[in-house]
Amino acid sequence: MKHDDPQPWQVLERRYILDRQPYMILREDTVLLPNGARIEDYFVFEYPDWVNALAITVDNKIVLVRQYRHGNEGVHYELPGGVADPGEPHLAGARRELLEETGYGGGEWQPWIQLSPNPATHTNTCHIFLATGVYKMNAQQLDDTEEITVQLLSPTEALDMLRSGGVAQALHSAALWRYFAETGLP
Image 1 (cartoon, rainbow, N blue to C red):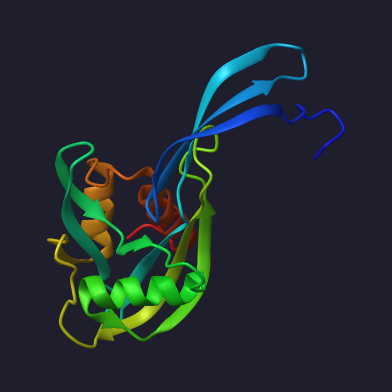
Image 2 (image 1 turned 120 degrees about the vertical axis):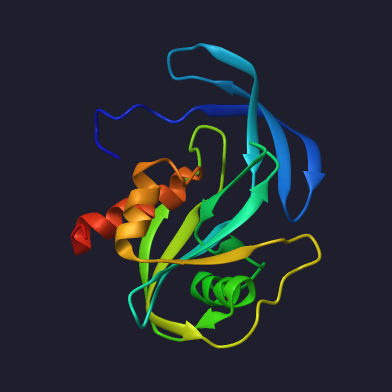
């Protein structure tokens, strides 16, 4: 922290309201701010970390998925990924999710971007990895609650889709925009 940064809040009380592990825990904190103001009911979501793959095939296609998301009641393009399993290294989780959701794997992997879904109310981090040179290894291995279609887009198609608002998940959009910023627009 810089010497002139705002100071952390003091937690006076912490109450757990909902515990639906491993997916979500909701807590309510009573906090005291450095200026003396008090917030009685500050809600925080304790989510596990998320892992995603920005995967590029050997023939330069971007591997995306489409699935229904009940929160916004829509179907959009997304990066393959999901919840990190407890104790699983983030890279291993991203590889697993890509293979399960799309059947693609292999290639060269590197950390790409780490983002907070919402640092004001969420405790987790989304770890996105860039995988280049991936290829089809086997069929999808979806959970009973997943209905996912795999979409392979050229860089031009992906950029057009991104510009038209085809990605609703802001973290996925940020990873894709960084990819185009660093590799050049098609």
